Image 1 (cartoon, rainbow, N blue to C red):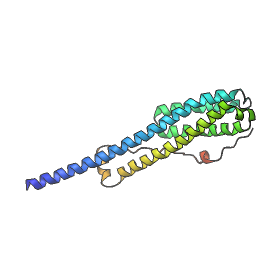
Image 2: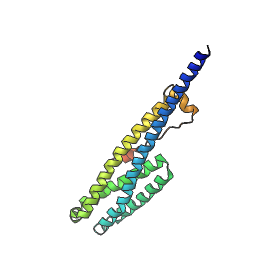
Image 3: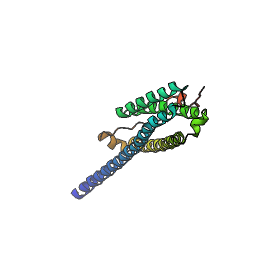
Image 4: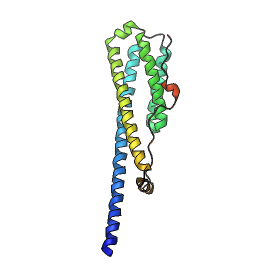
Amino acid sequence: MWFVIIGIVAVIALWVIGLYNGLIKLCNRVKEAWSDIDVQLKRRHDLIPNLVNSVKGYMTHERELLENITKARSNAMDAQKSGNTAELANAENMLGGMLGKLQIAVEAYPDLKANQNVSQLMDELSDTENKIQASRRFYNGMVRDFNTKMEVFPSNMVAGMLKFTKFEFFEIEDTKERENVKVEL
């Protein structure tokens, strides 16, 4: 009789341990995915001053755009330090929009477009933007998996008892951000 009770308790304990370990594994994957985004955002932030300095001499009429990019970069870096995913997503989306305007503006300047340094920086920036998108998709996939595991029965009971919390998605919030960039020179 005692062996049956001990066996049932052992099975339940192993089951809880398995669920807990699964939640921890997914939680660590979400954190790793966030770290990938963080690295790419840092790379983007480091590229922007070089790009702005390279185009500054050519683009005298777009000084306001360059100033706005610098402000957007500063806001994005502050949001990155705050740790608030929604605030960071908004700031990075604003910065991305400004960089899109810069890419379009560069097209209007043949000398600037032909400049090898600017061309290389624009290529690096484009590559970084692609990596940010890929990292964002990976992160959001990990968040989806973790949040789903937390919500389904019986994992939700263990997650609730152990005080696991959901992660936020890193997404575009405003439909205005999804519109095509319009630049008038």
